[in-house]
Length: 321
Image 1 (cartoon, rainbow, N blue to C red):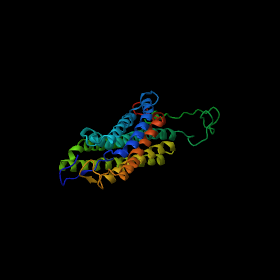
Image 2: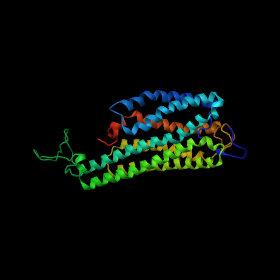
Image 3: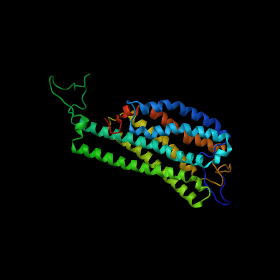
Image 4: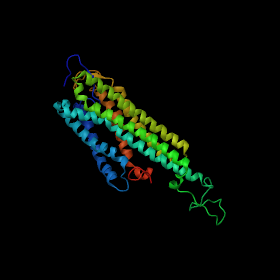
């Protein structure tokens, strides 16, 4: 579909699928389809299901459909300008990685709350730095000496610990609301995308919302990384693997946000145009798969490859153990 003469609109992220999109789309649909049983298992198993995975489950299963449709579009030129398909594609690409970022923020919150409680508990242990035997008793204790370490839940009764937990919950809750705002920007920009082809006002709105959504998401992903690193420095007992898990996934999703911010400046006068800036040439498609699709898939593999409920002790509703 073409715009009126002289009118340009934001180029579709990922471009319109052409023949050379068929092979990568099929491969990606198969790969996501292979991951589907694992995703469903994590969502269904009482040992691994938790509220933080809801967005990731939807994202992972939806990508199978996404690339299957993309493969069909590559073989059917008329589908490249289909109203519903174009809207669907631009909406899911805009909001998918943001929902993944919300999961990482939730895991970081639980990690911080556990660390604050355990720090308070260890502070009440006069033998916290002492060596312990196989049963956890301090080796420096006298024979028969009674010793009892506060449980993390009991430690939260301490006013300072309770205040720290409230601050953590408040800050991360505010960040989560901001995530929802970024997600809304992405969804709305995709919803209005097709109208932007013929309406200059809608084109400007879509462009603005795109930048707001991806820019806000990038800031929140960096905030999550900083929060995890500060927590690690503040609470040395936090496992390094947990911090690396959060930071590496956030870095992968940040790659998607940066890619989107770079290519969103381009405009075109037709969905199926191959002119410079249309994002339909082979080079643009290659960068889309490398910097948008692959990082998302790697993050999905990591999140579902590990049992994050057990790893971060989130409980089924993200409230911790």
